Length: 422
Image 1 (cartoon, one colour):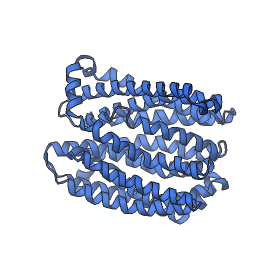
Image 2: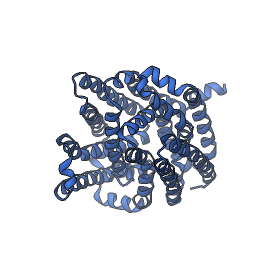
Image 3: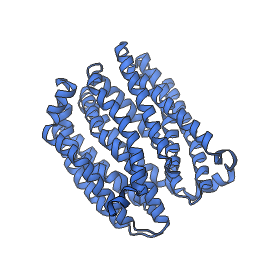
Image 4: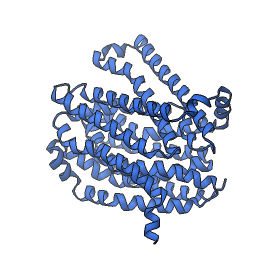
């Protein structure tokens, strides 16, 4: 009877719907990875990872974090106007990014030394920022409306387009620009699909968008751009900063191996973790508004996340390097070594990921900023020390160990603040 009740719960059903789409979306790149590693080099992956790390750092604040507030209002009209507010800010940030690149071209001598292809991709960077910002915002609206099937279809759409083009362009010989073009077209198809569904299905965006209400909501949720933006930048740097520091102290070859190992490590997180996070945020917001027990929801989520990811962690620790060499080629064995070292940290970060939205829900946004700064200090200390002694393995082991302690402390703090009532 209890098992039947659990299986029929909205929380599990919604996760299952998201999971089905995410599994397909992430199974595609995992299955074709052995092909890609024989078409593209670690250096090419490294250059693209560096490019996307810059885009990711801008995209994560493209709406000044107002997209996170979409889940919080009690009525859809307010939420829809936050979506409109986010869209306006995203367009402005994208335009500012383009203008910044243009003026950088005018005043910097370094820009002239770049290959013409690199210059072109720098000018296309604002388009990536625009598309990622729009999809993040619309995604949060779909989560609020519990339209998890639409999110699942969108993920599959993006994965099919991107990865099909990766292989086709690689076979045709576009190995330098193939990764960029395939991702650009993948993001374009993803964004177009989301916008089409949003405008077609939800009439609220045609009849209830109000300039005055947008201004009022911008003031009401001002804490997101004033506090959460800095925290988001810091958290983004935890991933992109590693690539930048590794490229600086070592080489794009090493950063390419790292980014590929992270791609494999993050695959289970994207398959399972993203689905859990999106459903958890909706459920936790609802529970908080209704005065429910957030700690109980946190416990269930942590246990379920740990059960799901433990087998992956054990496989990587026991046979990571050999597995990478067998599946992707001997050239990628070192990426397996990196995955083995970093997997305990990624495991704990995966468990933390869904419940990390609790501070946003209970109004502890400002407290997260100094906590996130501690994480960045750990990252900088570990990798700079690794660079000084010229030992990437030492840097990654120090980073993984210290970040495990940091994430465990963060989990305890999040659990404690979950007792705060509305």
